[in-house]
Image (cartoon, rainbow, N blue to C red):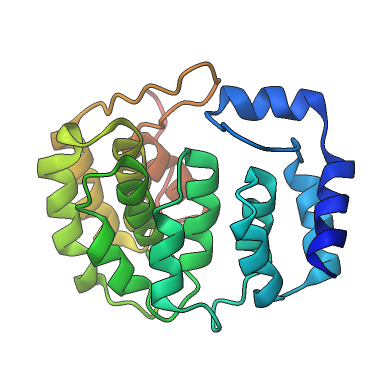
Length: 229
């Protein structure tokens, strides 16, 4: 699929209602208002096309950039390219999509260490979301995540709004790795208490880390459910 064809398909799939919804989620600038369902169908048609992904990103169009993260080849992406893209992030929707791509690249850990302490809200959020996704990888040792739990405990309340949300997500993801990490994460969650995040005009909420970890662990058979409460 050429850039012209992809752009035409995105334009056709866009709706005024979805543009309105995206606006409430902080998306600004040029966009067609394409749902993730429609983006998923386009992704199936394109599969992986890194050249097209780069072209889509360069347009600056929000929907094109989300599609770019979906069709980019993680093995073809370069660190320099990703460092350029991260500076273009301007809302949490594209940041989350971008983090999903970076988490599949060979240099994900390097980007985590580079971004999690960034002063920029979206760069910092990207770093913590990549960490959250990496927590799902069993090949990464538990020891990698322990220092990050300490950072979450001591710095989450001082970080910018959407970074706090991403750090909370990382805490949950680490706590879902295994029983040992669950115990460590629950202890951190107890010490940090409630994490306040302003989600604007959306219905989104930042989950209580401890409750979420326990709920998922119970559902997956990791612990026996509590009764009589």
